[in-house]
Image 1 (cartoon, helix red, strand yellow):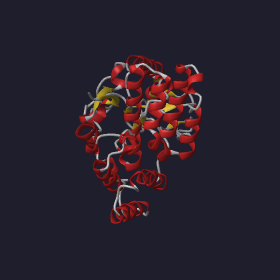
Image 2 (spheres, one colour):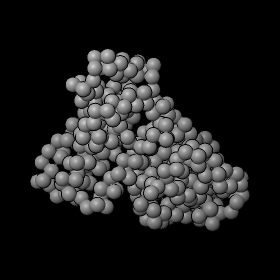
Image 3 (tube, helix red, strand yellow):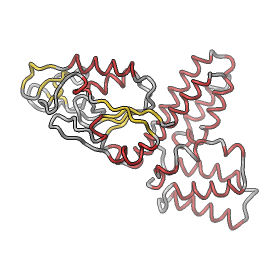
Image 4 (tube, rainbow, N blue to C red):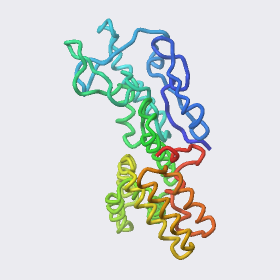
Length: 314
């Protein structure tokens, strides 16, 4: 079963842009589509604007901009785009992520220009009205945009969060209990440590007296913090720390030469000579020969399908 992820229609190659073109993102159609069920939307088309159509832009206050036609401020689409975003947020409550078109006055997530009376963009960038409505309705859903997904670290981080979000939704659907929540946290121990060792400890303390708290309230607080921690980019330093922790589970099982080889590979990853996939693959090889039930449950070694090849580039 594929994971539902929202996406700007033009990124799937649909010719819905103002000029009748598209912005086909092959990462989505040729790679991610094997694991994601994309739910496309074009808000301009959704509110009845044609193809092709007059381009629009954002003007006014960065915090509450107006969407108007580029050459005619009297054509105002602000309310329609915002209402469409709010409607789709209600309809698509089962999404586990969203990929937006960059710079768009409707779909842009970051660095969208908001023009002032002098004709120049405001110093502070804004956000597209449709994307803003979705973000306000579902602040914890992983969201990214075209352009940023070309960065290997941002791409890997986004997809890690999508799979973690989906994992959490499955947990909720199964019926939350204090025990299941603690099991989930245990499974994500090394994933969280890779993103922030400090915050991993704080999440652990949040669950220390889990049984004394209402499960729904506790789970809501935990999940909010979980997604915040996962949004932080894991570094080579924190990954190395996790790799060394996991290596410790093999110290009584490997020969001296195998230990040395593994230590050398981890160090070469630390110094950026090797990508993360190399020490991960070696660790998985050793654990296939020397199974450990605790490590076998860890999401860190398999946060998403290997076929995505995300750790080959970081």
